[in-house]
Image (cartoon, rainbow over all chains, first blue to last red; front, side):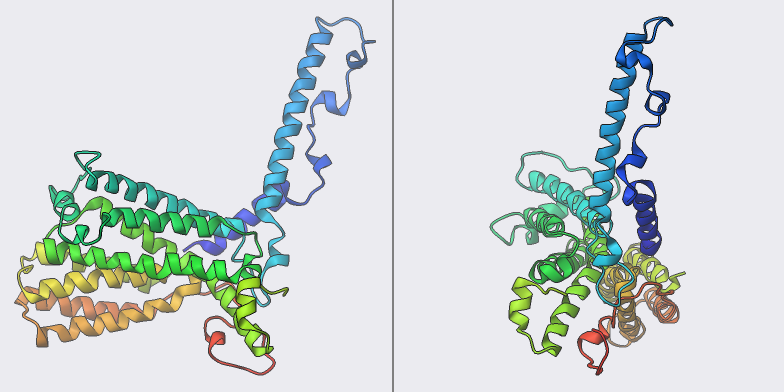
Length: 260
Length: 120
């Protein structure tokens, strides 16, 4: 939706704030740091408790240095040279962390919802939260369709969301070319399986004349993940297509990745 | 602007609610609307992102089903009106998908069409 804006925002935020500037520029700019008090070496006299003050200042400086170093490291990890890692002909890197982490977050939200519904279907919890449709959730979650398989259908949903999260988080920011198999697996987990959740949305009113709020929320989560996940799949498929055009082994590139 | 996508989402949700609101859930039209409504909304949501923008074109098929359904499935007057107006509105809004700002090589089309000398 606002992907380009958020990407540029995240890129500029990370790069401008902590991205590639030398770490020394982020060192604390306390008066002590700019002009170290003589008390640090024990020759300055007067002024209350200079030794205690200088110790506190030094501790503060160390803490600030550590926080700054952590933020800088995290920023460089998240940013990780997005322009250099972008596929040829692309204006951004679809495997960059700012692109993938929101999908992983959504998958974890979906997993939490599905796990709660699983606990109800397994009778670990006796009631299910339903603010809009009366006993709709109970009818849907206790329906014959929900028990077609040996495990509750919500458990399958939870497993699917976990697969989304795991395949979304594995690999670096060049995995679109280094791990095409994983990106395609991620796309299959998010895409077709997510779209299948719509079938369950259709079945609720048509077969049971009811809706289930959390089931709908889970379906919305599934569908929202599809769009932002597919660009990375496209990048990996383009790598495979290029391998085919260059008469390389598509099979090998699929599993081993490509150097370009 | 993404008019087509937001319209698709609104129309899809409307189709899910209309059978209960206008009391035609017992007709075949109720099942038709509650089946195609979630799909219309799903295609529209997926098409909110640039890489999958063309998925919104699937809603032309949904619009066709809505317009044609009164001819082959039992519709009350209210159901026919809801279906026809929703179908026409969906068809009218779907072309307006919004601007695509980012570049993605040769896109999905490049996977199936070969152009000599072009980067995939």
